[in-house]
Each structure stands twice: as C-alpha cells, then as structure tokens.
Image (cartoon, rainbow, N blue to C red; front, side):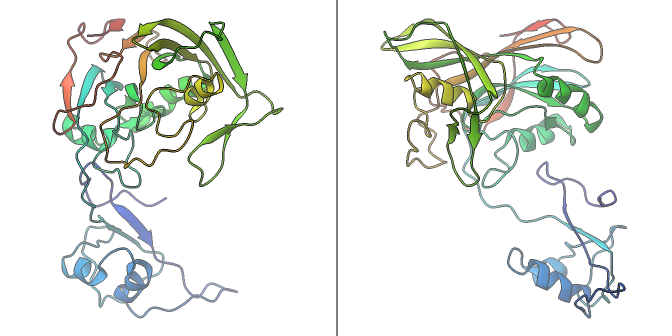
Amino acid sequence: MPPRSPLPQRHGLEAAWLCTPERDRPGHTQPTWPTMGAWLQERLAESVSVAEFLAGGRFVYENGTPVAGADRYRPTTFVWFHRDLADEPVVPGLLHLIYRDDRIVVIDKPPFLSSIPRGRHVVQSVVVRLRAQLGLPELSPLHRLDRVTSGLLVLATERRWRGTYQTLFQRGVVNKVYRALAPLSPHLDLPVTVRNHLATRPGEWQGEVVPGAPVNAESVIELEGEHGEAGQYRLTPRTGRTHQLRLHMLGLGIPIVDDPLYPVVQDVSVHDFRRPLQLLASELAFTDPIDGGARRFESVRRLPLPAETAGACSVEASRGGPPGGDEHSA
C-alpha cells in the first residue's frame, strides 16, 4: 500500500498513484529509464498527456513536490496525480437525505445514479456527489444498489466504521424490503418463496439460474395490490446475489416493468433516463452494532416511479422525524 496521498481529493475522488519498479534486483532484469519522465511516458502515454501533466506540475512525489520530466529515475518511488474526467450527462432527480449521524448516512437515491464511481459514471455517482456536498471525504457505501434501482442506500461516514456495519450486510442480518411493478399472473399462487442458484459470467450483462447447483439465492414474493394492468409486489430478499430480485421475478414469468436487461437486453443508452426500472429499495432495518439501537428507514419514493425531470441530482433532506430516532420516513 502507498503512503498517504499528498494530494487532496478532487471531485470527491482520491488521487491515482503509481510506484516505480525496483531495479538491479539479484536474478531479475529490469528495464532502465534514464528519467522519471521517460518512465511516466511509457506507463501512461495511452491514458494521459504526460508532457502536459509534467509541465503543469500535476505529478507529485510523496512530499508534494512536483515531478520534473528530467528528474533522474528513482526506483520504488510513489507518484500521485489526478486524471482528467470525461464529461458526463447530469443524472436528474433528488438524492433524499433520510438520516445522518456520526457513523452512517442513509440516502434515497433516484434511478440511473450509480452508487460508486466506475466506468462512465464517476462524478454522476452517489459517493462522489455526497463526499463533496456533505464534507465527508471517506464516505463509502455498505452494500450494493444497482444503478437503475431506486431507493435506500446506507453509507459509512469514515473508514473506521465501514467494517463493523458492512458485516451486518455480509451476515444477512439486515432486513430489506423492495417493491416492484410487474405483470399480474392468474397462474401464480402467492406468496411464494423462490430458491435457486444464481451466477454471473465475466463480460455478460445478464445473470442466470444454474439448475441443480446448491441454493445461494432466496426471495419471498408477495402481491400487495394493483396499478392498472400491473401488480405491485413486495419482495423480501433473504440473500443478496447480483440481480437476484430481477431474476427471481423473471423466473416466475413476471419480469419487472421497464427492466433494461430482463428478459432481453434492451438497446437503451445509459444516458436515456425516460423509463426507470420499477424496482424500489423501500424499507431497511437492523440493530446498530455500536449502540444497540433499532434502526428502521423507509423510502420517500412510491411506485410507479416517474421519469425524473429535476436538474442536477442534488441532496434534499427528508421531512421525517429528528435524527437519532428509531424510525425515519417522509
């Protein structure tokens, strides 16, 4: 692991780092670079403009001193820098702040907003936006929520709390309830518990059911009511596999409304925000591992989820009870 970065976060992101290889180790032949600039050019020429970064002092050593292109090559030396970010279309909608204390933050996210920075979604992610807006540079999510899924997401305010709370999700002791819109089916005898083995393959968008394999996914599916020709379903996952609820609803013959992946992958741009997946992480409850308090949270959103039309995805405090209570809703 590198030492602490000499550069502050930018756009809520830590600086990238590289470490020069050791040279002249016994039994090893290492390529030789005359200067730090030559090494950086070989490593990064395909991803950044090394000459411009060097001229602008954007590469720095551990003590914060800018790297000069003519500096003599230094083995086992860390170098930090911030990459330029590509322009990203603004994701519409509000990030509702449901709860905040010294250890956790609970938000209610709109559809199409990535939880973490990855791929083409960096600035347009929950983590990057909230780190800057809440002044919490170490903020990080404790569980997964798909980019196209709306609803509750819990984050740790600092690294020191992350492991303690994340263990709750890993052990499956957090009670989650989702709600979804899907076709009505007179052939289904509900409620039903779906149990099977789900798997994903590298490079594939869709997950799949593996017949005969040991059970690793379980969900309870109930019908709560009707919205026109669709039913509103209450989904209670007892495990947390990738796309679990979407695959289990598909397996029952009632795929979730406006799912871009199931039953078939839709040719929809990632920047098309007109048809949100009708899946909502609506309730979440657990016993706080630090103070033993009961924590229960409820989404402010309701089905059917409309296409968000607000501008930049900004934070808005919920109008629920005061922070610190056992139940928070708006």
